[in-house]
Length: 470
Image (cartoon, rainbow, N blue to C red; front, side, top):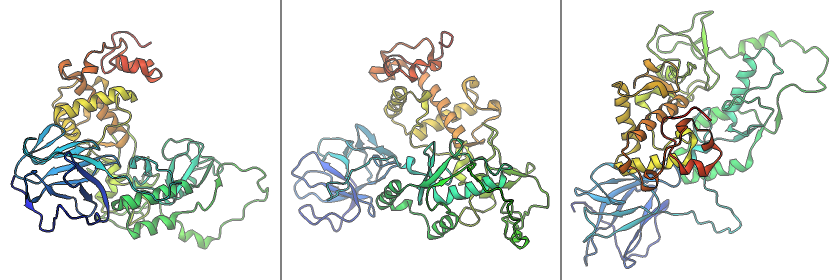
């Protein structure tokens, strides 16, 4: 195997592991040392063959994945390697704890390693370890990890203090009824109260220690903290025993400090400035305002739901939240071809976890990444090879890979593509436990699958209904 030689490696060394070690490769033969994988050095340098006096070589690169229990591996050698029984050339593939990795094109004559993610050792036995998907620790307004997290009631969704405070301020300024509660940015439930969540704040800090790449810049943090107004529990909505006194009018000199409707009102960006009385659109994502510019090629509305989103517009104008106020991340609204997917949506196949697991195993068995499978079926979609009647979006005939979709509509689009992926997979290529199942008469429209796990597991529901809905 032609790999890079490690100049500072010593297989017999008992020196402590490097700082930031988060994973390890455990050799099948205990006579050989384990290999530590560190945050600051993703290149794996270890013995490749068990031959006496063998050199340690740099043969692969391992990096963290999208959550705490996944990772990716890239072959750095000129030969192939084997990952979970698959021969890998130069591509990047997903691995997880328990994955078997052989640093060569065949097992004979090479060491075999088992991948493991190292648990953080806590010397305080009273502490409780919590496994949390990082995607569930992100604010749905800015799509970043929480900062000074607050929780709203009664829906108990969590947001950055600064993000929610700005959302609350804008909702109040845009509402005619000032006594009406603001809606939750995530589920639109009327918010009755909001308060800082100290328990989740500790989790937020623990995640940042483990994933330093999620740390925001000092400018972003300063901006968020300038918006933050939730200092203790706040009850929202109409208050009892309000004073009957007429509120005093605001001094006229404060009117000059009122924030303008959008960043381009009063300031020119990319050669454009809002004219007096110009029409504006309110973003469904962050609640902010942007000028209505239907004559430009910049997309401002999602074709799948006809909702308004500002991410693509402000990105085209060269603005981000760190430059000017609270605006949507461009990742919230992009062309289908620009979206990247690394994990299956929880809503896949109507939220049936058994069907989702089968689809995930089918993709793994195909030897392709999830993104590669999606790209392949997007091409079929563009070529009009798929019946679009099951696509639960607006304007289905006008949608192409260059259509802008919000994240919610994109997940529906992925569900549609993977439905066709599944129904097009021959029975002999399905996992054995899935191939032996009969199809439910009601197919994907079956309601029983959502409240009876035994029924959801026993019958195939990724199929068309052959009877009317129960």
